Length: 136
Image 1 (cartoon, rainbow, N blue to C red):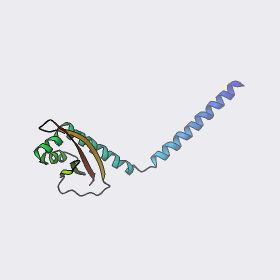
Image 2: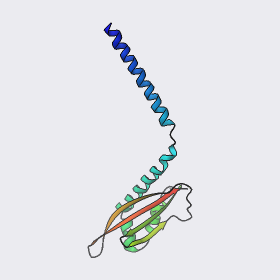
Image 3: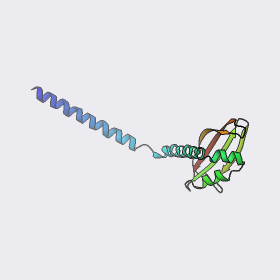
Image 4: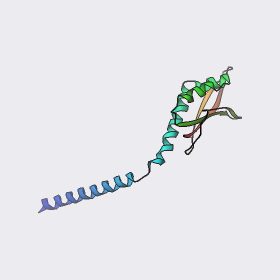
């Protein structure tokens, strides 16, 4: 008799677990995936800023006072993105680089990265690079 009770308990537990798994799968499947698009864009922006920082693109642009290298970096980004990069220090905005002929159709997201640049006198200067973007 004990074997039948344990077997029926196990069957009931499997049945309840299966019902919960099916209900969870249906609930997750009914969620719109459009909510995830801004998160992916923000991650891409953060990666792009990290890449520009590690490759020295931001520091070089500040030293030269020219946004050509930042624009070149933005040029290799996917074509369905519209991105604008801003570099500023404590005093305010120093430079702005964006993709030409770009119009946003989706929600905008922003990612930021702080970085340091060594001046010619050896002083570390803090800067913040921001990248705002959207899908076209």
